Image (cartoon, rainbow over all chains, first blue to last red; front, top):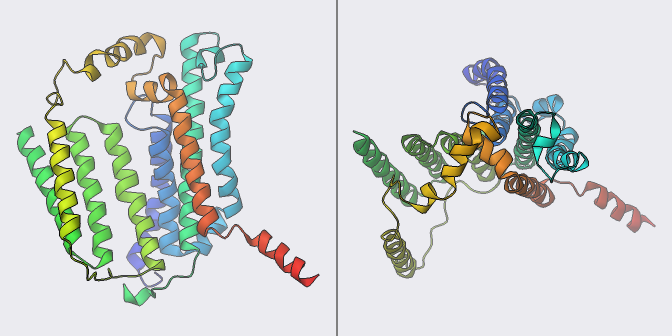
Length: 145
Length: 186
């Protein structure tokens, strides 16, 4: 994609707003449509777009494969760990009202943590699947498209 | 007006699907599947389901199109022409379609307030969310809190699917290969 000047400039302009929008969708999910799943996908799209236009090596310098693989597990651990914390605080598994003095505030904290876990896992899985596909030598050359 | 929009969108969905079946250039087929997802997302917006529409647009039209293109780059650009007759598959599809349409005849009308879905538990969620969870978006409250177990299951499914893809094509086996080589050397 080295010869596509417009794509390169637009990608540079768009990558940061896409990530910002992903964070908005992630943390505003209590009030508007969206949540961890959508935010994770949108966050991954920023990196995938960067990878498509600038090449896999460049995006893997920014976001190395080993970190992505660990983040996949970390998200699921955040989700499951929230449940363990509520159990340690004396309530049922994933009953967030244990997390704060006021049950409603506990629900807010719990939903926040759980959605964060969803977002981390989803975006890491999407990025690592993209890395896996794009990391193999293609059988079609660039000109044939 | 709303009925007109809905029918137009359904007509465009059918046209996209037919075009995707007809073409054998896979690049165009992948693009049409993205268009199909985008049209479905618009349909979900018309049905007042913005959360689902959001997911459909991001996953269906965005990520899966990219992954299909990645697959295309690893395989082939054109569909192999099949010499077999398509009579039996066509029959199976028509019979399945008739059965599905017959099944929908028993379903309640769209938007009917007396359906089990609208009377049974949804009413309780709408009533109790404001003071139990205190979150304006009831979909988030149901997903993350009332149905927290299910969502945990979904996250684990996504995680497992990612691991599966990595094990199949992610070249995670390098350490294993190295150990094999060391073993052979001895």
